[in-house]
Length: 536
Image (cartoon, rainbow, N blue to C red):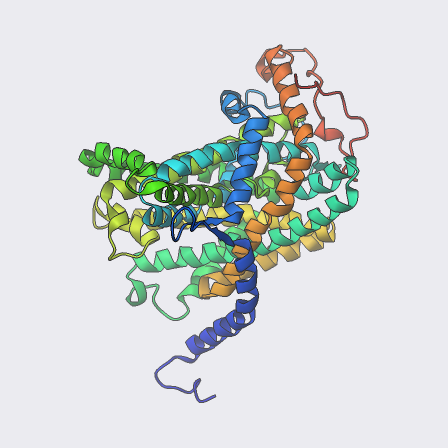
């Protein structure tokens, strides 16, 4: 009680600090244990001292490599048709679903593009050098295939209700897809685990961490602790405003979220890319040497084999952690699309890692490498490194970065609120009570995240996000033949003219074939599945 009476520290600040410390003390042992397992790394001292290989990165990247080989580089052949799909050329308003291909893509991208594209890339380059950029791009290209696989399954095994609402994602293809393979019990267990991990990730990494970093950036560019966001309750006030903005959108469900993200995501992506290009143009004379440095250090002979492996690991790690390929989260968003062809979303989804990693992460990396801020030991690795790169344009330019961080954080929260909702309804049933309670809880945690420093809780929730990949990728391997039939059958019909753009159909009946998600019953089964062409 004497502490609360201290004349030097305002009582509300002490209470807040005490709350943070108490929660951290409770979660710290649990968080340390879980994160120690999830982010466990195998020391590669036989290659070079200090080189470690995180197992979770191996799990994610190997899945991408496997499906790239198994599906014969599907993601590269899918690119052109994916562009046609998001342009709406194959959109049929009569198809089951709630959102367009573009809206599904925008929602999923909004969930992946976040602070990791800004701060995480800076950390990867600071630790691995400029060469990490090349390996980050390679991992992003490989991850495109994993995204296509999980989103195809997300649509195939989704549930379409009588009122037009849709529920889909890994929990449904794990439970129903594995049941078809005679592994029903395993499927149910994996589905429940996936949902539990999703809830933890949605509350922490998809909510509190985003709110916390958004406030930190807003406070930083407004004068820090001495600025107009430096007063004691600023975090809580910022959190309340942010929670209201989030709540106003998520209350309307996926259709409302999609209407916002299909405008916000293109704007913020173009906004950030233009900002990065401004940095490049301001340092244009350094571009050739920076590009050479990226290529040289990616295969640096003087660093030895161990040095190359270290750079490769940093690049792969950043890509795997940034684009979420293999986590299964994107399959939840894509399952709401208006289509009767699951393979269409397999095509559209390959664009996500390309946008997230190959475009946005690479732009951040180039800005950092060209300005040389990655080698500045006076600044901490992270968003400060990227901010220093932006400052080479003008002293006020980091404000642009702060705006980007806040937009990225906001869009991420919108997407993860939906992921958490679908995990909740799978576990507790589809009802208005579950819907409203989850959305209220989510908004409350926005305020907590903005006004607290719950490091242990956020560390725990980050672990939950990556634990999502364990049940998900197990399911992807088991259902790999199902995916191959869907994708290859669809492309065969597309090549033979059985599938044409809506504008060319006229009065011709919609071509049949593939899995028709609209006929999926409430039990997740498909009572009258039409035939699907076998891949040859």
